[in-house]
Amino acid sequence: QVQVVESGGGLVQPGGSLRLSCTASGSFRSTGAMGWYRQAPGKQRELVAGITSGGSTNYGDSVKGRFTISRDNSKNTAYLQMNSLKSEDTAVYYCQMGVYYFDRYLEVWGQGTLVTVAS
Image 1 (cartoon, one colour):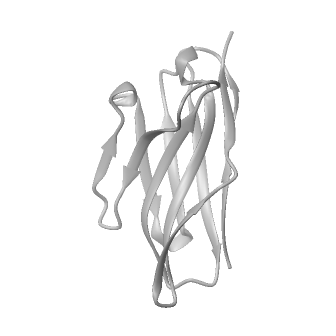
Image 2 (cartoon, rainbow, N blue to C red; image 1 turned 30 degrees about the vertical axis):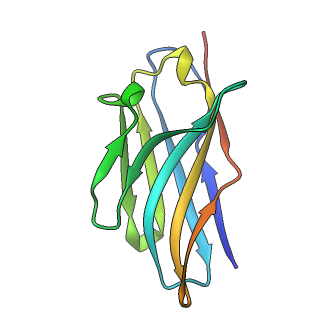
C-alpha cells in the first residue's frame, strides 16, 4: 500500500510565500514523476507544476516565474515553493506521486492541503 501526504498549507497574505511538501510512504521500489495540482471552488482541477524523475519541470502559465517545484528522491518527497502569492492562488492543492510498485506504475493522490491567500 502506498500513501501520499501533503503538508504546508495555510493562510498567507497576498505577496507572501508558502512551501508545500508531499511525501510518499509504503512499499514501493522508487518514485517516478511528481506533480502538484490545485482546485479552487467551482473550478476544475488544474496542473500547477510537474517534475519528472530526471528533474525536468513544467508549470502552469498562471504560476510561471512565481512557483518552483523540486524533489528529494532520498526522502520520496516533492516540494512546491510558492512566492508572490495572489488571491487567485487560493485553492486546495493536491500532490500526485508516481511510484513503481512491484511490476506496476501507480499514480497516487494525496488528500490535499488548503492554501488561502487573503489579507
